[in-house]
Amino acid sequence: MPIFTWNDSYSVSVVAMDNQHKKIFDLINQLHNAMSTGKGKEIIGSVLEEMLSYTKTHFTAEEKVLERYNYPELAEQKQQHAIYIKKVTEMQEKARSGNLTLSLEASQFLKDWLLNHILVIDKKYAEFLNTKGEK
Ligand SMILES: [Fe+2]
Image (cartoon, rainbow, N blue to C red; front, side, top):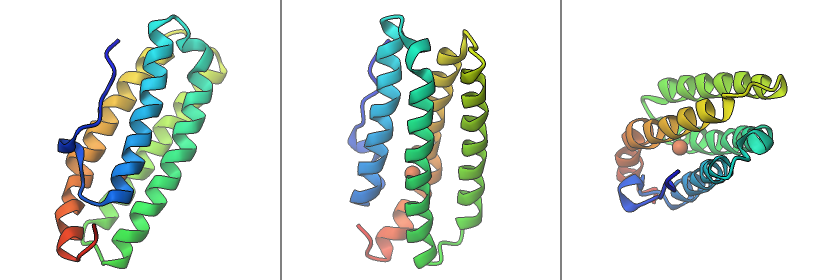
């Protein structure tokens, strides 16, 4: 399975946010690597747990900086974050019950989610924050 690589086109032009996004790429790649050697099922539970805890930290940081500048689309951003947390929590429950196809479903979902999160949702705030001098 190909490695999912961060590049400049994913930048939201705020260093702290880019670094957090890179960490999320790493976690998804860990899952990909494990799956390509048949170990997806073994690590899916711990990857999901780490994804959930790390993305919660990331979302809090994002929401805090957006709140500070009264970002007009903050409510939508928060709603997207909540939908993601719900979905990953559901997948964690499936992992606990030993669902066999979960690692494929999870890796697909996480990759699609990350691309949408960064390229659509976060790119919207990128320009806004840059105009406020946040880099
Ligand atoms: Fe983000």
